[in-house]
Image 1 (cartoon, rainbow, N blue to C red):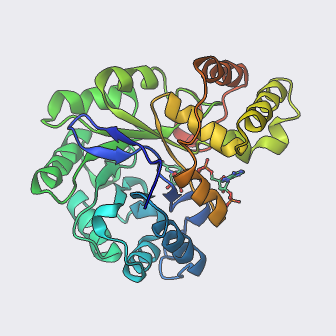
Image 2: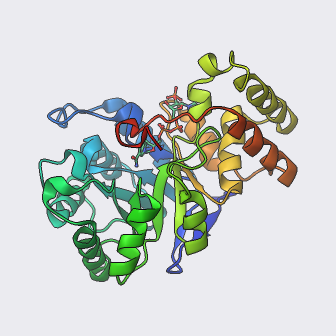
Length: 307
Ligand code: NDP
């Protein structure tokens, strides 16, 4: 199937799709204890994503409680495994105290796969398991060496967290998945620049946060110029505002991880993101207008509110 898909090369030489189109958290997230309440909508949405051209990048995590839906969609789709890129995460903040290897094996079994393409530590707050970051990272390294996790990385890590595992570890994390969008360009101080210098690939979750909050933020003095500029670019390129924001993320050398309940939006992200380009001046203008807006943090406020 013809596709405009692009890939990013990680620091170990492996390739990853330049956009993750089907996050299975946020809108699809289920509370602990709700795992067996299956969402037919999510199964259909993943199956739809798996029918699109190119390698399909699915973002899962232990605490989303949506492995069953991912597994059913994979089972009902005839998509070859090498056309699917699956990210999973060890979620120490909400996983009944399972160890890394227990969580990892449970994820594989529930999704019905025998490897994942990327395995992340979901957050640096892992004391519940009695682990240090260094110990947890060495368990991920063992999964990497076994070939069951083709790439490994972290999520929501600060510079100081990364420095610890860079010092103790043998394998450099391939990825740090953080909240990143025009209204939050450094989840924690210095993280954007540090990861780019270290060749740790950044992934952006909530890349559409400004759109998610448009109705409130449009009315603010700092929001209005941003949204008007976004509308201008959407009209110039004849693309949705969402696609303009996702493209801006890619132009900052970050991989956006998005999701939607609407098939047309999933298709747009997979098929049309690289059919147009923003100029450097337009990228800089989005960056600057975004920075004029007060930081908007959608996730992990309880730990990062003071950053
Ligand atoms: P986005 O910023 O992409 O937001 C998705 C939301 O935006 C959906 O609810 C969708 O609504 C809406 N949306 C999608 N397309 C458009 C559009 N064209 N115009 C207007 N609204 C649109 O990402 P999320 O915040 O949902 O996060 C994506 C994924 O990232 C999660 O599912 C999860 O996998 C991961 N994540 C990881 C975290 C971590 O700690 N590592 C934390 C949070 C998320 P609709 O359904 O109506 O289209």
